[in-house]
Length: 357
Ligand SMILES: NC(=O)c1ccc[n+]([C@@H]2O[C@H](COP(=O)([O-])OP(=O)(O)OC[C@H]3O[C@@H](n4cnc5c(N)ncnc54)[C@H](O)[C@@H]3O)[C@@H](O)[C@H]2O)c1
Image (tube, rainbow, N blue to C red):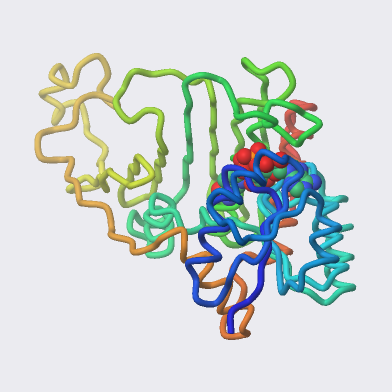
């Protein structure tokens, strides 16, 4: 038996959700809803027999559904989630689940009352670059990790359609911040003690297009997240994903979504070098401490291999719906990410670090 799902919001990601639901044996997409008639016409061209609706109420009244994927604009997530819960549907909501923690709490009230399941499409927990870093973190591949830098840079400062409007839930903190924060919180377990953030509108008038976030954890790891949509460099691969992980037994660089990079170590840990021994100081260049390393001191190893696909998100989802696995993305985790995003905005406004847990 396959579960009957509808997709609400047939845009960039909604199109993919229809295909995914049709690909998995466990599910089918039996209806699509979008308030834009052009989008519904597009559905009919590809799936002529698919029932389509221009409003969610009609969808719920006319279709017998097990669940929905909500992939409409950010500002519509709350209303659509509450409606879906009231109609007894399981819910996968796109990220960010809500614009505020208060909105999210209202959504969860409706979900709990209806006794349906709720999760968010945080499929970037299955990105290859992230899982390479997570493996390094979990297996202590560079020793005790003290810093993790996660960054993503773009080139034209523009965002798509409604993403440039504040009222629609636009801006990069909502769009990508939610993924980048979720990845760090999923990897680094334990209490997050403080949040510092700089959130700016560099080119866009209404919404943020740059942020730097510093998360300090109780276990002494510091994570730094930086994203800029107008952060320019002509280095090859710059407009891609970057990670740097620093530990006391090496460092790891990971670049690109399909990761490239290395673990870098020294053949011995640095020792204090007294003046008499240090005959070749001149060869180090302008600084002794930060000069050129002695030949053979730096060694590299390939990145660890990871075997993940974004579609693993749905593999877990359907197992969880069948009660065979725990749902990977849990409401309390989603709420914690939203709390961090609110702390980021507060820190940016006050120019101070915010105590967290
Ligand atoms: N998880 C991911 O990696 C990922 C990637 C892209 C987008 N998203 C999320 O998916 C959502 C949609 O983003 P997108 O880029 O596909 O946007 P989009 O503009 O391409 O598509 C959104 C669609 O929703 C429709 N819509 C808006 N309000 C509606 C309502 N009340 N009822 C029904 N339809 C409605 C719009 O007409 C539009 O066709 C956003 O929340 C976004 O953050 C997630």
